[in-house]
Image (cartoon, rainbow, N blue to C red; front, side, top):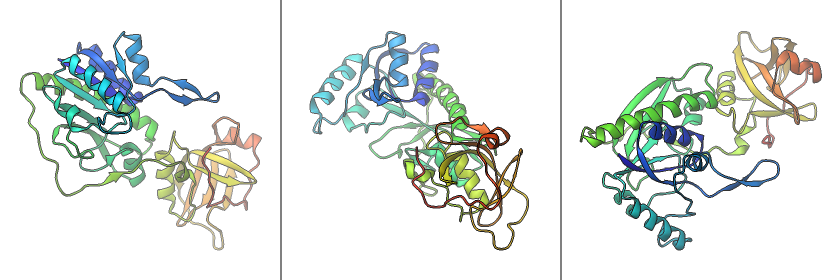
Length: 326
């Protein structure tokens, strides 16, 4: 199978690596333009570009694919590259650009998308984060035939996995990335022999996974302990749940709902108890035990280590409304 690959972050790189290892012919990779990153804000290539360069695969980085858009010269150059590749299909994974109709119809078999949810639930930009935040018990990968809508195309293959009670976005991302690459290899093998059967997405159960914003990192202690615990897992590693206390903003990396009731008169965000096992904090309906924390400029540490360098005592109160993003 001769494919063009379009993707940008690590999730996409994992899929590209699996397709390459499976023997797919990849004459062209599309990825986002290099972006400033790190403390020096130097231009950095995407994970997909780095893989492509390491394996001597031609790379195109158009700022847009719209021929009538803001960067028509980029789109025209990309169109020439896509047409000359003469691909059977385009595989798209977390690319970050909208594909206009001319792209969708150029490859012989069209464009296949690796989407990290069980469509139609969690269409959109952040399906892994939102599934954990919502308390979903399962998610998975949908291989989709792309159309001009936002994740509205026909489903080609679907495979479920359980969301573990300890899953963070980071851990679930890694499992889904491996699953997505494997399922895409399977889908292409079926496509080569006409073995894929498109299935329209149900009209019921549609939900949208809106992009994660940094301001969502701020913990709202007036929410339930269970909701806060899910949000901490959902925002690990980005944007990292955080809350101010004792004049500093602390990142909270791990926490768990803890048995017990909140004493009468305790305020949301109030520290109830401190031990080497964790920091117990009052939420709206119960207690949340913080077990891994980080202060500004420091490292993420287990509670016992953290408390040796940062004095938290019962009666202190974590803030509930703060721009807590780093």
